[in-house]
Length: 444
Ligand SMILES: Cc1ncc(COP(=O)(O)O)c(C=O)c1O
Image (cartoon, rainbow, N blue to C red):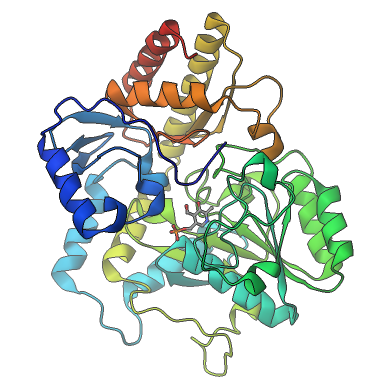
């Protein structure tokens, strides 16, 4: 099962009375579970003290080659010099003022509009959840309808309307599977869940709820359960259905935006949404996000006099995040970073395929660009039903062994592994050598 929070057998930590251990105990005494985000609880003590380039170090000084990228924001590498310098300069000139706008916010919004073709207007906020929340609220305003549609396996944030049906157990497929207690059932009743890559399922839900769906949200590549690529015609079909039914098509490009291309996955797919949500890689680790889309609709936001859809946030357009965003986009504009990442990604996927094939282990190595994920199963992986055939035990064993050897991947089954531009060919080869020796010892 692909659970969200789970108990794991601890990875062997070398020193049990280490500094890390004692910090983890202090963390647990002050914060429930000793972490700030449910998804960061690895099931064993893990305290990080510094990061640079392709590596980070734990509180005991052990170095890890990082293939997690903080769930996606780290695109150029940790503490990339250009980003760090831009942030330091911004810190010397300003902090938030909370009135009007700064030049850097204008520049950042202009950069998003320049690169993302569906972005006629842009509003900046701090997190992916804020971007998708505002997209849904706007869609309800422009359509006058109450419901939304999402896909099994896609994640769009932590609030009630979308906190359901991500890594559901098999028994919950086809039912509402909330990620949380305490959510309003009435709110989640307005969210319909369909199968990814299955247009007929979307048709079925739309016919069952005629004139009710305001927004259809989709990760154009479903990366929250690894990597489900959209099948040819899927995104085009969603566009067509949304046009036919007057539904707002929202591409949640929180992971794919800037990571897969400056113009987002929409620029690769050639399918334009009405609204786009961006975050993570747009500022290489600083809290920066954006909602972008059709001018006529974005003009409903109350940032404009007469706008009747509230858009607010004390830290929106934070100058240090803006500096990071501008430096990150600037570093991507020559195309060199993406060429490097795609080359590394291809090498990694080809290397892993060869390793599993040599060992006779049934596996599909999925991925795109800088993202890779092995699914231990036979046959194709097109949607979440397929992911459920994944051998979770083998995956966890492989991941924990990598961590012990100083290669950090999230120790949770089916989760994407992520390259950043500071990785070298040698780093990829070190990953592959380590993987080969783990696989030789067996994953059973
Ligand atoms: C596709 C997608 N959308 C939205 C979010 C929510 O973003 P945040 O955690 O910044 O609120 C995430 C977070 O992982 C995500 O992967």
